[in-house]
Image 1 (tube, helix red, strand yellow):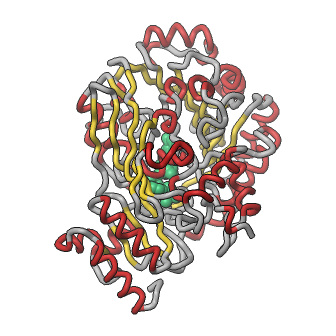
Image 2 (cartoon, rainbow, N blue to C red):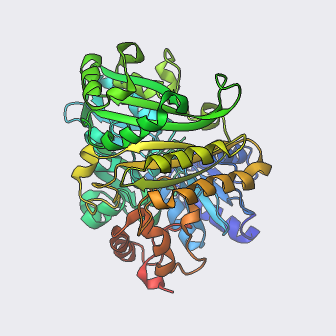
Image 3 (cartoon, rainbow, N blue to C red):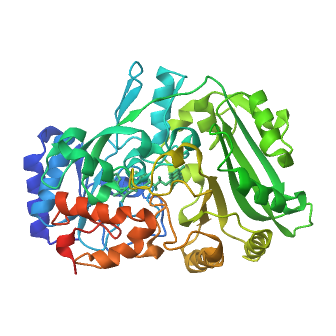
Amino acid sequence: WATSASSHDDFLECLSHHTVNSSSISQVIHTPNNSSYSTILNSFSTNLRLTSKLKPSIIITPLNESDVQAAIYCSKIHDLQIRIRSGGHDYEGLSYISDTPFVIIDLRNLRSISIDTENKTAWIQSGAILGEVYYRVAEKSKKLAVAAGVCPTVGVGGHFSGGGYSMLSRKFGIAVDNIIDAKLIDANGKIHDRESMGEDLFWAIRGGGGTSFGLIVSWKVKLLDIPEKVTIFNVTRTLEQNATQLVYKWQHIADKVDNNLVLRLSLTSRKSPVLRGKRTVYVSFTTLYVGGVNELLRKMKKSFPELGLVKEDCIEVSWIESVLYSWFPVGTSLDALLDRKIKDLAGYVYFKRKSDYVKHPISIDGLEGLWKLMNQQGQSPPDLMFTPYGGKISDFSESETPFPHRAGNIYQIQYGLNWQKRKDSPKNIARIRKIYRYMTKYVSKSPRAAYFNYRDLDLGVNNKGNTSYAQAKMWGEKYFKNNFDRLVKVKTKFDPTNFFRNEQSIPPLLSYA
Ligand code: FDA
């Protein structure tokens, strides 16, 4: 128990009093005495690396906005911290662990998606996962798309409030660039839309992270025109097949090619059967082109002939199929997009991620040093993902949303490592940090920027108790650059008592330590 028995009972009584429909209480409130508690706690806790001594006193799964208001009201008067969970994909588990007494508000039941094809907009509740958003939109029209992330099990709530990169970002911008309204419940339980929350708060929740400002119940997004056919390919080259030169060249074109083209690289070190078990780096060029195959081939021939792309490498599919096939084998039923279980999907349970931004192409020597390090990391070297920027992402200024990684960034790096046993955590975390240290001289500086949705507590955490501005600035500037100070101002105005908080939430200035 995280709280004493009496305060726990008082909290439960408060919730029972304030939830609107008492007949649905058992669907909304889950205590450790209920059989539903463990299933709900563990089902969307994606990263088992992360544990805390405390378990949530209660998990609340609201059925409507009034249940959310009750949960916020009762948590506030009983001084319990809340953790808000939509899809549970936070890389550091901040939506479901805490080392101070807490409750989880889990939004799995708030997942309605209402689509207006005529005005090309949709209202999406935060508890929906991206897969079901894409599925429902495609059900209505194959000529409309949503600009949001690649993995179908990611939750809308965390993803939209933290940025949202997708294979459509070079054409349409990231998720936050396409959000036009939102419904937020503040620390007093008041419900706001864009008009009543005002432009400052609406700015902050589009990239500054929802957790610091309130609970966002739903989002209104633009639906984007997409042709009936797009083209995808996934071509892999090893170091022995000229991958170093290809990556070097890619760095010079990835952010400049046609906005319809996203050429993303996955880099993995594996033993090669051709090299009799010696390790090499495999570079996969994973691509979405918004258009037909012939057009794509023409563009690739002009800007990246070295890859040697041929028609047989490519398939023309609908946009919704392109989303599906980035996770599942070709031919899988679209229904797979509705499955929320990440463990079954990705097959891992422990993981660590870090991120970087590259502003100048890395030299051949630098790349060769990276390959050497990847190949030296034993059985489980970190995988890297190079994600191209430019295009529409650069059309927004650094301050237009809290997400500041705009013009001048060629690509983003994600370092990732997954493993199966708890005992392997220290050595695997050390491996990923070693590669991150090596990359220092090749990536952005002052600050060394990072992507907020790829949460990384190595960058710094708030001090316990009073969250200090100076302490938070250490990690905050990396995610938000100069937008950090504006986020602090918005926080100070809308949540001065710091009710909505976690290890990397924006501090209000009143608690300046
Ligand atoms: P979760 O529920 O864990 O929430 C994340 C954070 O947001 C927590 O701090 C939580 O409290 C807060 N929060 C959640 N809902 C809220 C709400 N309604 N109101 C206020 N605060 C709320 N990113 C990307 O840009 N492009 C991609 O393609 C991918 N792909 C990807 C694949 C996989 C397998 C993983 C694990 C992650 C990604 N991501 C990603 C990163 C992803 O965007 C990021 O982890 C999101 O924050 C996840 O949102 P969830 O709602 O799932 O997480």
